[in-house]
Amino acid sequence: MYAAFYGFHDHPFLMTPDARLFYASSVHSRAHAHLVYGLEQREGFVIVTGEVGAGKTTLIDRLCAELDPTAFAVARIMTTQVSGDDLLRLVADGFGVPSDGNKAQLLRGITEMLRGGDEVGRRHVLIVDEAQALPMPALEELRMLSNITEGGRALLQVILLGQPQLRRTIASPDLDQLRQRVLASYHLGGLSREETHAYIEHRLRAVGWTGNPHWHAAALDMVHRYSGGIPRRINRLASRVLLGAALEQASEITAQAVEITARELEEDLSGGVVPGTPMGVGPAMSANAAAAAHGYMLSHGGTNGYSLADDPRLSELSHRIEALERVSARRERVFNRLMDLFASNGGRGP
Image (cartoon, rainbow, N blue to C red; front, side, top):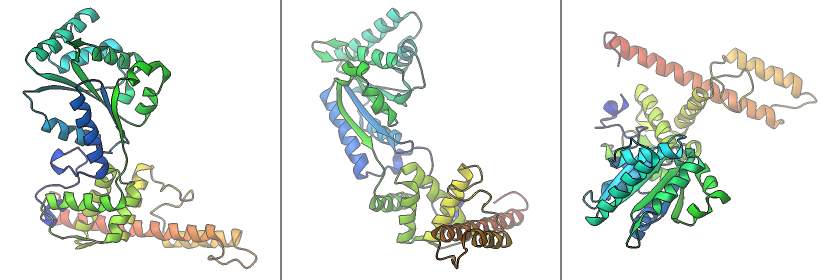
C-alpha cells in the first residue's frame, strides 16, 4: 500500500531475504571475504554466525549467484534436529544422489558422486543453514564427509550458517577434530548507526525513492536504536513506519513517528504490554486514567514536598504515559484513515 502511495515500484523492506537489495555493509563485506577465502582453499569448513535476521541467508544467496554453475555443484539444506543418518540422506538429496538404502549405501553413493565431479573438474559445496540445531553426531558425520579425498584433495567443502549458539557448540571438546578443520569463521554483528542510515537509503533508492518521504536524520538514528542494526529488524520497523506515514499522507518521517511505531511493535510482540511499563498502563489508557495514575503515584510516593520532577521514578512514569498516549492517538488516526479508504473503495479495502 505505502509503495503505491510514495511511487515505489517495489517494496523496499520485505521480511524475506532479497539478494537484489543486498547492501554491502562492512560486516557483510568481511563475511563475504571469509566465504570467498574458504572456497579458495578448496577444503575444510567455513562458519558464519549471526543473530536471527542478521543477513546470513542474503549473504549466501549472493555468494551462490557468483559461483559458476559449471564449476560448482552446490547443495543447500535447512536443518532442524536430525540424526546423523537423516543428515546424510539430506546431503544425498541435495546433490541428486539416491537417498534410500542403508548408511553404507548412502556413503557409497555420495563418495561416487564426489569423485565423479572431481574427474570433470567440478567442485562440490554443501551449505547447511540453521546448523546450530544439529546434534553432535550429525556434525561428526559432516566431518567424516570432509575426509573424502582424491589425490590429496578434499572433494567436499562445507559452509555452516547458524545462530550464535553454533559457535558454542563447535567449541565443545567433543568436536575438537571438526574444529581443527575450520578454515574461516565470522560472526555477523549489527550495522553501525551510519550504516543503518546508508542501508535504509540504499533499499529505498533501489525501488525508486527520490526523497519522498523525507527521513529526518534523527528518525534514522531512532531506527538504529530500536533495531540494534539487525537488517530484518530494520526492515520490520521501517516498513511499519512507512505504512503509518502513508496512511497519514505524511511527506516527512520524524523521530517521534519512528518511536511511536517501535513502541507499537514492542506492544504487539509482548502480548499487549509495552516492555518496561507498569502493570495496567497500556497504550489505550485514557487521559483520565493517566491523570489518576499521576495522582496515585504522587500521593503514595511524592510526599514530604516531592514534586513529579523530584522523583526519577515519577518522571519516568510520566514519560511512558505520554509516549503511550501518543501511540494510542496514532493508532486511532491510522484506524480512521483505513476506514476512510475502505469506504471510498466501496468496501473492497484500500
